[in-house]
Image (cartoon, rainbow, N blue to C red; front, side, top):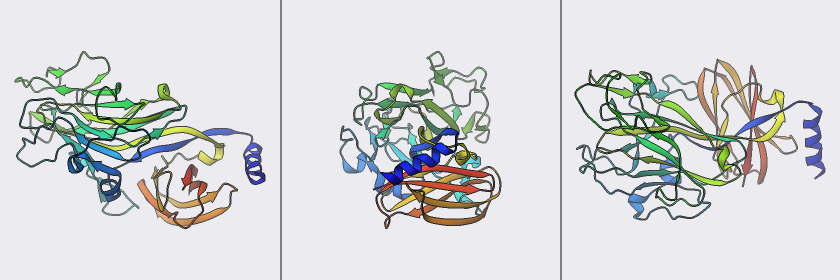
Amino acid sequence: MKKIYLLLSMFLLTGTFVKAQDTLLFEDFELTRFYDTLLIDCQVTGTPPPAVTGDMNWYNMDSDGDPDGSGGSRPDGWFALQPFSDVDAYETVYGGTPPDTNTVIGSNSWTSGLMPQFNWLITSSVNLGSADTLFWKSAPRQTPRYLDGYQVRLSTTTNADNVGTFSNVLFNASEMTALGTDTTFSTFTFAPTAASGAFVHGLDGTYIDPTLGANSHQGRLRTFSAPLNAYANMAVYIAFLGTSTDDNLISLDDVLIRGTLSTIGINENANDLALNLFPNPATDNVQVNYTLTAETTVTVALYDVTGKLVASESKGEQAQGRHFAHINTSSIAKGFYTVRVTTNFGQSTSKLIVR
């Protein structure tokens, strides 16, 4: 306890405090770790999500049972695929040249029957703080014709795959309802354009590539956010629900929940690197994700609760863009730690739990 009091005293002596942004959940669908260990495919197991609280797995569930109609043998539910736009096809990792191929997760609505899809992608349980925000990216395969829609829903009880459990709608993206003959953005028929809060991909003429011909455009990944203040201090599940009827594909990437959970000295977060850790809590290994706005030298370090340096790695000079590093946590004691990423422009920190 004396060590903890000493650490708190060191923070108090700085005189100025800010709230650090802690990552509660992050998934970029890049690693086989997600598809092989975290994601449970209910089409493979033959059983739906268990409808329990505190479940730390992700679930993929196609509850409509409508088979693929594209002729390409697309899987049921959500599945890994490449981004639709060339702009999103690659991402910089370690500043490498060429950068690594990007992967997203998508849902198919081009089916053999004309019925609404119920393709569920359900996150693990997340314990929210007092002021958290959900971020994610999405892009349709096509717009305005064959535009897919989806919803983001929240459950405060269990992860059962039904709209009654996920009764809180955080976001509603519209699908196309009429083909018509006019494919221009100004007069094309979308739905539900009159619904409160509905969003239409491509309607504002941004985040689209006119590469599919005059009658269609493919979508670029676009970032969205939803405040979670109404669910403060609750354990929740987030569901991405593909809801379209006989359109094409919708994709998701970079699902992130960040919240204000810890207090640190103001100079500690002078450089916002969009720092996040996954998994957190960690057991054997943690991935440190960060984004650089300019070329800089980078050092990634791990500290215990007393401020003692546990591990450190110099990443050298790194280019602007997204990067990650790995910390082996299998041989360190269970407990609370701080990960600090230091650049030429400042430092950014995030709390880590090792269990």
